[in-house]
Image 1 (cartoon, protein in one colour):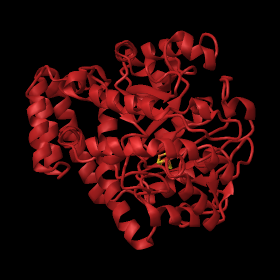
Image 2 (tube, rainbow, N blue to C red):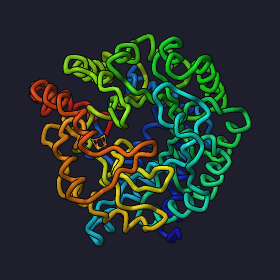
Image 3 (cartoon, helix red, strand yellow):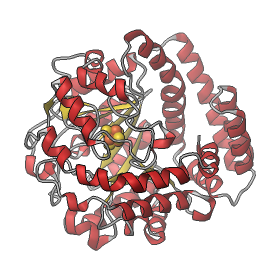
Image 4 (cartoon, rainbow, N blue to C red):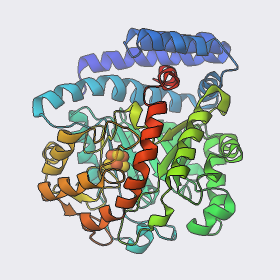
Length: 464
Ligand code: SF4
């Protein structure tokens, strides 16, 4: 239930956003300053951050100014308005306040975002992907997803991430959810092959959905694993989404085989030209009994990745796109965000897991409320130990600190929830032991450079 205060604040935010959008079109600097001043009034920024952001806006050649301007001018007004309202005001300000209160009251973690899988089904058959092998067996019903979001809103969670399987095999239900929960923001990780004009029109009408389309490189590299013709289909979907003024980016799993291609200038230029505003980079994780550890990066490759992404995000990088390196950006979010600290994952069987990569749980949405699931022993073990390492280049209880996941799973009595084949925590963590040992020294060397470096602080001032 929305409170009167929430309704009033939301209306005010909507008025200011609408005014700023029309102002940007006439005079980009003035309109962006309006939005910034509004954010300052809501105490979103610290003084220094506000001043840095102001300077950036005053420089029309700055890549962040170019990104913001194109986001405002090229996005459909309803899509822009709804995302600023839902992700910015509703989830970022209103929801966060409720979460702080509930966290104190329940003494559990409370997530800012929930990632859930509407289905395990997928229309593609990518080499090595569990969804292709598992087939079309598991689904969350519409009523279950609706109930989950209703419970989520009660604890202040207004931002939902969807993955799978391929979530858009359930596109009718997803649109219905987005319509019913119109104050929430939905970000969908998709293979991008089921996006058509009719769907784009609906997304434009609703406004509160954004997307990340999976890509693993250019055509040959991508289609080798994902199937012939997939690259072209994704490329066509991006063109369509750009035409309809939707907000989307790329979701990239980087491995020892593709990390150079997916961070190359050519690749970034390609996705930016197609209309991508952001790219999520995910380190390959050896999850599942058949996972291939040799695809994990060695220390030198991971170092290259860290340096390259930081270069690309600096002014020198010059590509107007926002880049998130899930495994190497721990210092900006105090390490691991899982176990409900900032997020959790619910698979297509309803199991409530700490993270999309950690398939262990003792709670299921079919037998537990969301609040009960947050209090499950494995989540409490996460809460007691987070952050798992003071060096945030080693954030993960599995990848870089496998002894910790072993302990937490054993202590909590959590069971394997892997959908294709149960995997013991010993089996999973033994694939990470060597990686963790090899990465330790290099990560310490890099932490010396980046951990307290002013470059990082300057960067944070610009993006926070
Ligand atoms: S469990 Fe590991 S992969 Fe998941 S959020 Fe934490 S650090 Fe990242």
